[in-house]
Image (cartoon, rainbow, N blue to C red; front, side, top):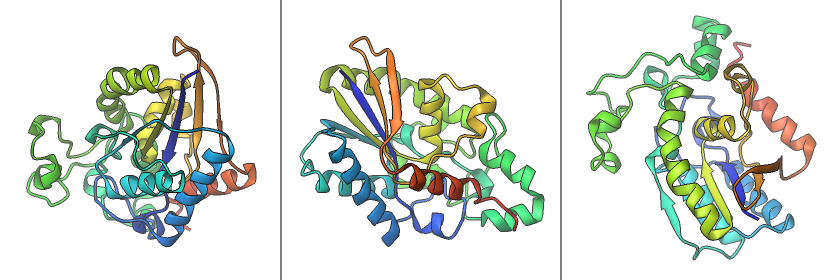
Length: 248
């Protein structure tokens, strides 16, 4: 029976500082490292053994994945990395403090920028260091696919080919697949897997460092899904995500 384990990276330095991160590359905090280790423990306790790994190109996801595999003694499993699993590009918001931005523009406007399905923030200029064309890891990609800003709908559009052509093939081939990525790239995948509406996904808060498992039949029809871990801790971390854009 194929199993998909998705995991949002552990707390990053810009998560801690409550800043819009997007494609900006930042490291894990000590808390994030602990979250990655606890995620590995939950995966092990649930009896799952990943056989293939997928991550984004961003350090916080790569480091989380490496910690998880090391804790599980699975550092040898084959790994694919793709820009298609990157976090949503937050455009001109990248680097800004979320609470301060909410104080300036209002919580409702910031919620639209953060969580709406089809409304992106203002883009960054092509010359900006926040534009992916100026990052060497993307130099082999066509400039036309590199975003200056994104909404969740854009993330879903760029993610779907990778899900349909690569991850699903690995579920058939390997059985248990681990995907370590980001709040919005995983929310885009969750929207598809759980058939959520545009309105439902706006209210969906994905906590850092908590594995979420999807069980399929042999035809990849979804059977069930659930978080791994203590329900109270999961709720606490999800509430922290929801509160990030509060102006208070």
